[in-house]
Image 1 (cartoon, rainbow, N blue to C red):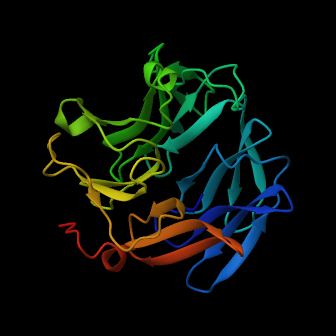
Image 2: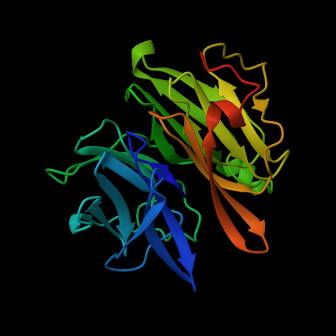
Length: 275
């Protein structure tokens, strides 16, 4: 699960070695990788976030930690994150983050997840969604922190045997908190904002698998997302840098195992205009 620092200078990613998940930091300019030695077990499903250009935040053994790029010293930020399913900071250098959680239920047992905010200074938690029959997961903020996107999955669709998420909610602060409920191909499992905040790149796993772009500047529910051609269906996760136009893609399924690819989004997504 690669994640760019806000300035695009470093890329944090998780690497599985002999069944153990490890956290690494890559400097794309030098090619140098550094292993962050964590206190416990990392989960590949709970995500990574950058608090600022020098501080990466992650979850280990149910607690939230940070590590500095300069000295890699660990700092315990919060205990009690065992059920988190994705988190993000709403601004660079901020102390408030948003996360999704199924409360006391383990990650391998389905239960509707809701969104919460956490103030790292005070430890105060506030629940911001309460939808008993819908799970909200994977919250991500646009670069300016004014737009929030997250994935949804409905209980009734799980009962029908559908897999994965079946929609994306986008709430925009600068548009009077207007909410978009975007229907999309079944099984979206990952997404990333474009640097200008006018679109979202999503990965669909099951029905019509592939990488899709949703143009929010000309959004219309009757207009389907744009399928990105010539992009491997083996993509697992990805991250679009807000500062350097670089797109980091993790692929799976090769005989050698997972691979991490980095290229300019303007080249990889050459059929889309991001003006």
